[in-house]
Amino acid sequence: MTAEAAPPAVAARPPVRPRTGRGSSLLGRHPMGTAFVTPYVVFIAAVFAFPLVYAAWLSFHDYFFAAPGATVDRPFVGFDNYATVLSDPAVRQAFGNIVVFLVINVPLTFALSLLLAIALNRAIHGRIFFRVSYFVPYVTASVAVVGVWLFLFSSGGLVNQILGPLAPDPSWLVSSTLAMPTIALFVTWKQLGFFILLYLAALQNVPKELYDSASADGANRWQSFRAVTLPGVRPATVLVVLLATITGANLFTEPYLLTGGGGPNGASASPVLIMYQLGIEQGQPDVAAAIGVILVIGVLIISLINRRLVGGGD
Image (tube, rainbow, N blue to C red):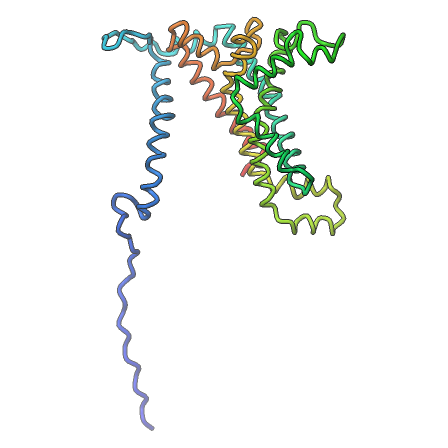
């Protein structure tokens, strides 16, 4: 018997090292993407990050406006500005007003924009006209739209004429009870078109097969809405609630124009409006900055809670 020849030994291969790419040293593995993102990062840092950090610095110092080039002492005062803010009844009232606004505006924005988006997503006659009609108030200048609402909700306006003896007295925008709810309804109506577009985009990404499966299983429209539509648009719902909360917390133009600067007696004043009055009109930018920091922290907390509740903890 002849012995079989042993197979030749295979030389051991050196370990394969990951390829780093040309741009890994400075611009990362995707230098082109980094180059495209850099201008936006610089914009965010210059327009948002730096003012926020500077506002936080202002809130801990005794800061006041001075002549250009003048050297003045701006000492560190700790939490004195925050104590001034929290002890001011007008500021506390403004934060209470914005809570009332958000309680009305955010649920209405979510419910109306979703229902109208579902209706406009169906094959109905003239849906292009309705889509444009709902979006027009969003792109119209606030000053022009405010004029229409003043015509409708003033003391002698069209709404009171229609209601007759049922009209509230004092009227909508001069009533300490109805001023902020009226502004909340106005903002909801004005911004509704933008949120409808968000939901329309989300609804068109929900697979039609899911509705067919639900219908085959005997689900009615309400059950299909709960089992298919709501989970399918959940990411859009998180975005809608987040944007509505942020824009509502920054309310300024509407109370400034509709109620003449937060009237009556501060019943429609917002924290941003108080910031403007203190920082610009009364020359107290340090106290105004403290209000801004408190507002940012409050919005972050509310946004995290909303995201937890609406997003299901994802």
